[in-house]
Amino acid sequence: MNRPVRVRFAPSPTGPLHIGGVRTALYNYLFARRMGGTMILRIEDTDRTRFVPGAEEYINEALAWLGIGIDEGVREGGAYGPYKQSERRDIYRRYVKRLLDAGKAYIAFDTPAELEAKRGEIANFQYDASTRNTMRNSLTMPSDEVQRLIETGTQYVVRFKIEPDRDIVVHDLIRGDVSINSNILDDKVLYKSADDLPTYHLANIVDDHLMEVSHVIRGEEWLPSAPLHVLLYEAFGWQDTMPAWVHLPLLLKPDGKGKLSKRDGDRLGFPVFPLDWIDPETGDRSSGYREAGYLPEAVINFLALLGWNPGDDRELMTIDELVEAFSFDHCSKKGAKFDFEKGKWFNHEYISAMSDVDLATRFAATPRGEQCVAERGPDYLTSAVSLVKTRVNLIGELWEQIRFFYEAPVTYAEKDIRKRWKPDTPAILTALIEVLQGIEPFTAATGEPIVLEWIKNNEYHLGNVMNAFRLTVVGECKGPHMFDIIEVLGRDETISRLQRGIDTITLPQ
Image 1 (tube, rainbow, N blue to C red):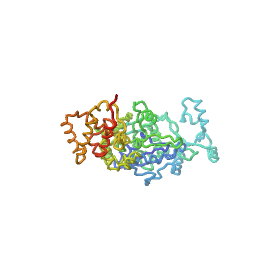
Image 2 (image 1 turned 180 degrees about the horizontal axis):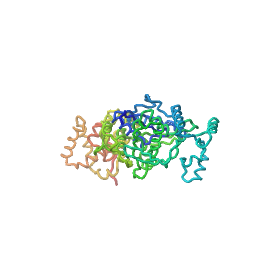
Image 3 (image 1 turned 120 degrees about the vertical axis):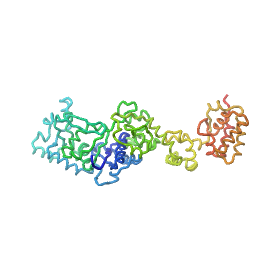
Image 4 (image 1 turned 45 degrees about the vertical axis):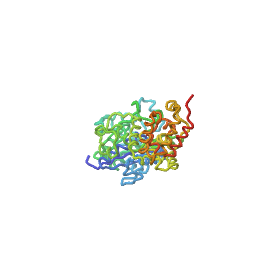
């Protein structure tokens, strides 16, 4: 295909953007950037009965947070707009008429009740070449009757006329040639007079053609509709501009048994949406990756490798590296298990690799982080975060790791007291206070050798002394390097905590 690469991500504003949809958007973006092409965001809002307020804004915000850049769209504009299908009614009407005039489609007046009755009469009923001549449509009714019904406002639909017993071949860049016989297809509804809007099938094809889309990259669930779309391209005489089809493998439940759903996330405790979503009707909140403490770079890296690989054993890849390596040759035909624990691992690796300042800045954007900055300032927060960042998987977990930098312990871990607090501990720690008072400057590099030499010269038990020291300062025997901790706390706070521990901690009876 020797034409500019133009791809589109075309979500429907019917609710929050599922993580599977995010991966589809990502693959479109990676391919477009790899080929020097254009990324289009088109809002497919023809099904007005399922429209959800706020969903379109959510889609835009989610893609922006993830760094999936859009070249043309409702917000960005472009030469092929409008990019919202509800604003393209006049365009679709012309193409509906074109199909009707060519005898490729017909008008049907069957009511929902009549269709339901047919389903009761005929097992596995579908509206097709074998049944259409028994229904109320322009193929069986006089033309003047059809016109009269239209003029009197009788609701109707326009159906595509599929010829029977034809093998339709869809060439898919991942799956190769997929052949489907037209006998299993029904005469799909292309347009509904009730809302003067086309269905997905017609709008999708017309828009892809007019927007000069070169590759249609979408989820595997849309593969059954591809033969119909091939037939529509032929019906319009657009075979030469038919896009390349790419149907991505499904995202599967963590156990691999079925398509990933919101229930799986609720049951196992992980998000399936990029951002928090509040249902406008019920007020129910669904968790998102952003608010759960994931970095967008980590989410992108994680999703990219669900159903694709770079052809080698690399896992941690920047967006530029993903773009450089991306091709459909390494996309899987099989569904990809959604390993949410692996997603945490990616986030851990990205957090660990971040600069201390950047990580502190991201944490400072959370409510708890704002409070930390208000209490001690950004530099103190950065110093605290730098000591614990390799211990967390999520941004939100930072608070539990740095809490003791902001809150002196008022209780102490009993198991650590039993193990590390000895009868002579108060006296030893009182002597340690004198040692700490003489350290200049009060830094880890200066203090550590002095304290360790003091312990050695007095033949104290290193583990007992240092762990008792840690217990008074932190409240339990865990945390980062002890001398790094006291450098951040400063001399006065360190000695104050030591003294409080000496005065408070007693040996269990």
